[in-house]
Image 1 (cartoon, rainbow over the protein chains, first blue to last red):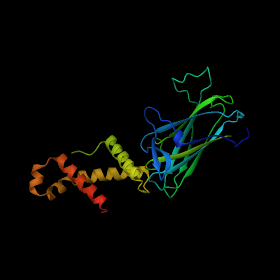
Image 2: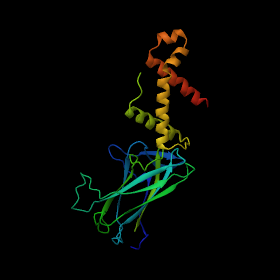
Image 3: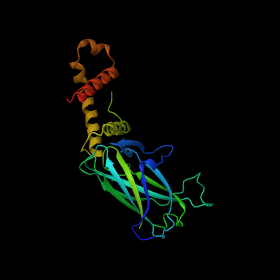
Image 4: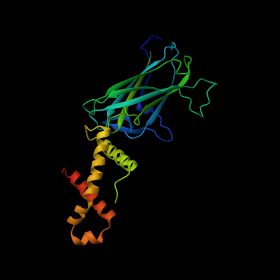
Length: 163
Length: 85
């Protein structure tokens, strides 16, 4: 697969939450979002299969956010990949690879979407094969000092591309 | 009553941010500034508790507990907020 080609797209209808510490489902003018708290780290998951055309280049993940209330400040986003290859990984335990992080700045209008882009190397993905199932974890690292934005950060959608 | 503890102030800041988020009420203050607001408000309430108590009519001043007066203060503040004060 060529660099930049879409591998997966996720709306918040596909978001999955953990037993605790999960971003909460919400709706904004008919748009489904997931609210990530400002005072504690929260996460959500997405599941899919790597396309059969994945070429081993790692992934670039565009995450699209809105602020519930803020018109300034930064959020720190984390992304981690869990390879769920058949007959190998025990899904009863988490096995995410090294988390990548990036920060993004809120738009001056709290209803406007802004993008935070992260990259995960093929190695940190667990060196998956094309077609393998996977789980993607998106986190707001609210506990980090670089996360300065007050109020919830609302994840609107996620676009995964080959790097 | 003594000043709120650091964890209690952090919880108050988190609660305020949640309330603003639920209402999607635009606010330009950063997280640290929200926390500074909470700290200053707690300090002001602590420093002015005696003055506030003295301003109350003698009836409620003597018959209501400190916790009940705090709750009443919250009710009035909330109503003023709702009315756009």
